Structures are given as C-alpha cells and as structure tokens.
Image (tube, rainbow, N blue to C red):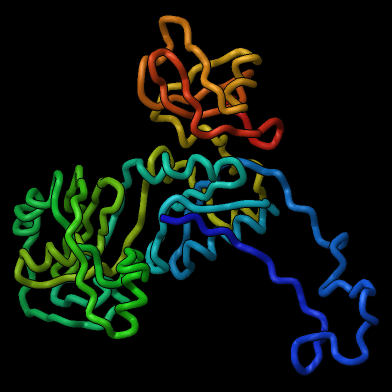
Length: 341
C-alpha cells in the first residue's frame, strides 16, 4: 500500500480574467506580491518521528485518517501501513517523520481480522456497499462453515475483488470497475494462517482470521459463500492486529485530541521482529554515511535483516553480510522521537 502524504492548500489572491495579474499589476521586473498569507505566518511543521497506532472508526478513509493525525501532530510527513476501507474499523498504523522509512516492515507483518459475513447475497464489491449480483435462499449451518474453513488455510490462490487498489495496465481496478469496464483480475497466492467461527446467527456469521500481506477478507467471504452454495459478502470488518501493533496499544482520534505525546511509539517498534545491535559512536557515524560496519561479539547477528542503535537511538537498518551490517536505510532522529523505556 502506498503512503498517503497530506498537504494544505493556501488561499489564493484574486486573479485577472485569464488567471494572471491583470493590466494593473506591478511593472515588469518588480517583485510580485505573495499569494495567500505571508510565509512567516504559516505555523512551522514539527520534526516529529514515531508510530501512532490509530483505532480507525467506520466512515473515514485511510487517507483522511492520516491527514487528521498529521494535523494533530503538526508533522512534516506522514503515511500509513496498509489501507482500511471506509466501512472497516480497527488498527491503522500511521508513521510520522523518519518512521515512514520502516513502513515496509509493518506491511510485511501478519494481520488479524474479525469480520461478519452476511449470507444469501453476493455483491459486486464483495461488501455491504455494493450492488447485489447473486442471491440464494440457502443458509449454511455453523457445522458446514467450520467444515469449509480448512480449505482456505495455508497457501491458497485468491482472486482479488473487482473493486480493489490493484493496478491493471497502470489504472486502479476500482476506477475501471466504477467506469463499467469488465475487470479480469488474476489469482494471486496469499497465506492464511488461521480461520475460526466466533459467532453464528442464521444468516450472519462472525469469523476470526490471521493472514499475510495481500490477503483480501472480502474475497475470502465471497469464495466461502460460493463453496457453501449460498453466496455471501462482508457486512462488518475490524482489523485487530498489524505486525507488532495490537488493539491494546491503539488509540482513537478523540484520545489523540486530548494528548498526542502519550500515543507516539518509537520508530523501532516496527522492527521488533528483526534483531538489533548496539554500535559505537564511530560505527554509528559510518552507518549514517551509508558505509558498512563490522559486527563483533557472540551476540551479533550472522545474517538477514538487522537494525543498529547508538546510545539507544536508532541509526540504521540493513542486511548482515559476511559479518558486516550493510545499511539500506539510515535515520536522523536525535531528539525528535520517543525512546524506549
């Protein structure tokens, strides 16, 4: 998923009929007046870095949520790690400042969902916003649903929903679908680690899922309904985990409006699943210049991804190759981010 960077629009000064200064503007070569309010009146953005684990509510897009958090922190840069549809709620990790460099590590992490399937109707969007395209009077029993779930666990082939952000020849699938074009999406391999029935009430069932990157819960509900011979769509969806971020550490927009500082997590929270190594000041300076350093000590990682800290501050993340840490991302944090206790 791409990072969403919000921006502010300054008000514009009056323009002539063709969008220029008009006949009574300043003489050629003279300094033209600034549009909008003077630059020195604009509030200075903060060099804030860290993660906000937002509990996104229903009815707001992920882009809008990022814009709200960015405004509350008055941050220079912000992005999210994995889109949530407007009808979905739950964990939306938002990266501020230098934390945006660690977004891929969060997006590659495991995700957990709790979702409700309404049986008897399949929609063109595979959720409650869509138009019905198939209907059935059949309703599955809890036993039938539980018997069908194992076929969807493990490495499976899944065709994404027609209304998805996947690109087809440079255009988003949902844009093509909205224009009435027939969208043929190719099945992709995804991994689902766990599925279980939490509640079942006749035409509605609540299911818990744990899965990897790229899995569409809407497609899972659609395919499950087809296998059960009754059709179905997602009528409610909540994400309960993304990588290291869980509901226990999440906060609402209302909580952020009361206090932002207490809900900002260190940048390296996103790197909890890879080993860390403490380096000296000289080694830290080398890493920040993009140069590799030799790792010593019996606790030093021997391969794979790792990140380095100097004096408790994150300085770089990269690959360990032949006893050296080769930096791929360097960080300039200083006093701009919260530190671990």
